[in-house]
Image (cartoon, rainbow, N blue to C red):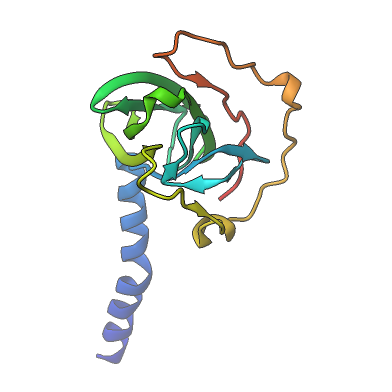
Length: 187
């Protein structure tokens, strides 16, 4: 009887979590962590905020995509006052991938913005609202990197020189420019 109880406890403790992990892999469930910021330095967001001054120039959306089993892509879709202003497609080439896009924002485009992170199937993974200008709200810059990002160990793979990355192409004001991070980063 004791043997049977121990065997049952073993099955619950060790086999069930493996089945759950296998199910997550089979469904290809991906998650995304995001930060709005004014720039990206060494693949990490800087100047994080959810409100920006009207003269900010550009706002970046940094994304860390987790859980992909195959190469895929995500899109950052930028909305200003409910109107789609730009869509930027970004490749995701490993199970843990950091990337970002940015949108040039002239001072006259002050107001409410939203960036949606969309997967390859068109599912909205996250919607991130932010505000530009307005004068009524004080810009709030976050000083610390979120704990879950800070704790993530960095992988020691070479990073391409800035000159090796595709330069941002100037587009019509209603379109976003992008710079892609083409290296994996570990967890």
